[in-house]
Image 1 (spheres, rainbow, N blue to C red):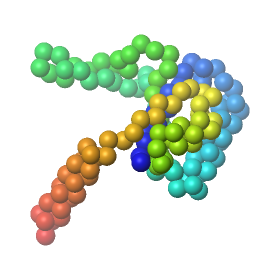
Image 2 (image 1 turned 45 degrees about the vertical axis):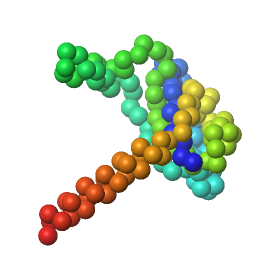
Image 3 (image 1 turned 30 degrees about the horizontal axis):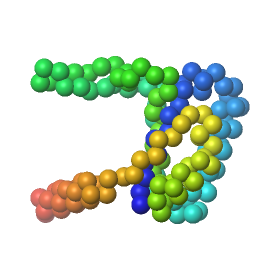
Length: 136
């Protein structure tokens, strides 16, 4: 099963760390990601820039309304995602509970929606084939 692990971070806490502390934690996280790779569990991931650089879109009066920053008022913001392959939720919890990033902020572990993702993948493939057909 695929799981999306959402890693949250308290940016104020992160920014208060020394450069050496943050470098050590980052290295520990990357090393653990390598362990997940060796076990065939790491599918991918993306780190995110600060929430200060984000926008939130909401429908307002029938049009997209752009709000600077995250919509929720919280100290912890989404810091990145990790895509994980695991047998089941308990296995995903076991793998991620050892991730050094948990010391910086919580992880939300959520099963991927395989049914919807299969539709998205099929649509992507059909789109690519239609583009290839027009290139000839």
